[in-house]
Image (cartoon, rainbow, N blue to C red; front, side, top):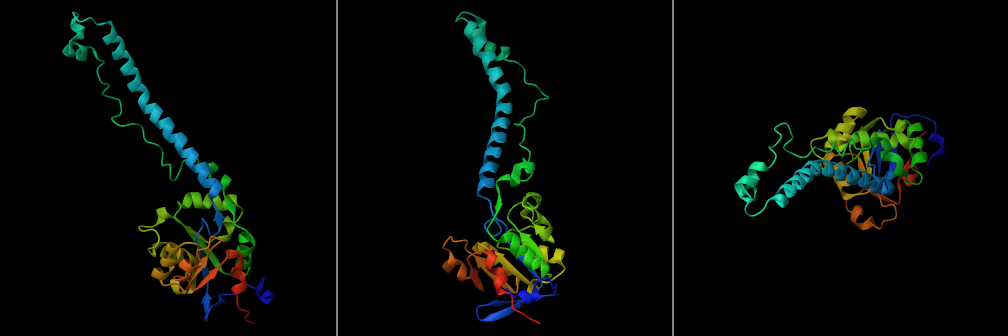
Length: 257
C-alpha cells in the first residue's frame, strides 16, 4: 500500500496487475466467500427454514388428521348388516367439505427473502482483513459496491450487522436484476447507482461466475481471491490477478503524486 495516498481522496486510483496497470473509480465485490464467511449463517438459515416448513406442513395436515379420525370412528361402529357399512352410506356420512377452506396448504412467507431476517446476520463473520481493506479504499475516495446472489435486503442487513454497511454506496442483490451471475446485469445495475461506467470498475470475487460477470460487463479488470481454497488455476484462467484474500488488495495500489 502506498502510504502517501492514505487519507487523500482521489477521483480514481491505479492498481498494478501482472503485466499492466488499470485505473478505476470503483470496486464491485462479491459477498459470500469474498468479504463474508457465511458458514454459520447458512446453517442457521437452513434450520430456520426447516422449522417454518415443518410448522406449515403440520398446520395443513391437522384438519385432515381430524377428518380421518372421525371417519375411522364411524366405520368402526358399523356392522356388516348395518347400512352404514355400505360404501355409499359411508360416503354419505363423511363430513361435508368446507367451501371456505383453502384448496392448498397455507404458503410459507418467502423463506428466501423475509424469513427471520432479524436473525440472519448472527452467524456470518467478515473474512480476515476485510474491514481494514474497505476503510483503506474509502479513504482513497473509491466507491464500493456489492453484487451478490443473495437478496438485497438480507445482504444489507448482514453488512450492517457486521459494521461495514456504511462502506458501500450500492448493494445489488439477485432480486434487483433479471439475470444473475454470470450475466452482466448486476455490474450494470451497480454502475448505474455508483455513477460510473463498467470500464472504470474492478470486479473482485471468489468464483468463476463472479469473474465471468465482470468480463461480460466489460470491466477494467477482474481480480480473484482464493481464501486458501486452492482454486488458483481455475480462477486464473478468468482473472487478471489472483490473490489469497481481499486483504491483499491495498498492496496493488500504485503511488501517484
